[in-house]
Length: 468
Ligand code: BGP
Image (cartoon, rainbow, N blue to C red; front, top):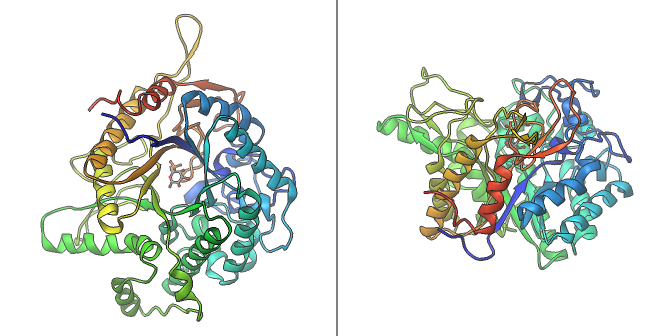
């Protein structure tokens, strides 16, 4: 069992979950700096001491050590995001913050030293707070212009260092977490569907515009969309349940369809009509949307079921939950583990789009224990993580056998970091343990987990050591 030559093995992080240094070197506040509890809120408006993202794992000061460890594992690619508020602290000013730009120059240079290719998410749940408070985030069309200025700035600066770009992290998540994903300050309960889908339209136009600009400024660059993928299975074979699945799928497929096909699908036009939603489009929007992506990237953690029976309870999940599947076990956070679902989504995306695919997030959030081994050495025996990743990668290989074109795989949280949904550090994903706890204690020292050596071997053998 081997993967294609040149397969991009690596890991992924996001600025707000690892960098810390929330107010250093001219960085402005981002929405994450006022979101100490993650998805469940509250929004504090000013940073509070209980917000673990303010320090996070201090990647800002320790990136050299961390990238060296990634190189030791053999990473070919490292997915990271640029914190928008390091480059434009308020989001709406005209001149970028030079120190912020310099930081990512340094990070990319460090990657280059080891032959690691950066894969950059332009916006990963970290819009400048000012854009949320002053403009209500992506609900406001003006965000397209601010985002355009931001992308032009980073493309001009990094065009010789970065070839792989993602426009928005999990762009479909804005339907479920409008503040974290879209910087929309209006309470989710009070936000109308009209305003929500109008915000989606603004993001889709901005994403296509970024793709257009990237292609003009950097002919070598490849731009991808990034979708939160979650296979949805019918809870029963009842045709009503299958229809419920189809309609739930539409709410996610919509995003990929616009990015790849360059126009709104018919099923969304029907949905807008039935919901009384009118998307306000400027004359140029349809033309801009025709700038389609070069590849499709996605996160994959779990699958769910759907049913037409509204009395059936929904369970927890990665931003969007669903009806639990009686055939699957769940992680400690209730996310149902389904390796075969990864082969299924890979085939589904490929059948639909015929574009190269990139798995840019996958992994297991678990409580790890740092213990002392017999010889006094620090140990983290995360066999459960090795099992999870082995089983998922076996299914990636199966999909490749099915003929699916897969560019690479970046495991989520290749180094422990702050969770997006619950803002905890105790929910660990890394191959590298970071001694930092939810109560703020810990040395911030890094330790290699058992999975570190396992992943190193996976990369070295190009997947040959995986166990079917
Ligand atoms: C995705 C996000 C990531 C990441 C991951 C794991 O939705 O793109 O930012 O955090 O999920 O989720 P969590 O951190 O909530 O466990």
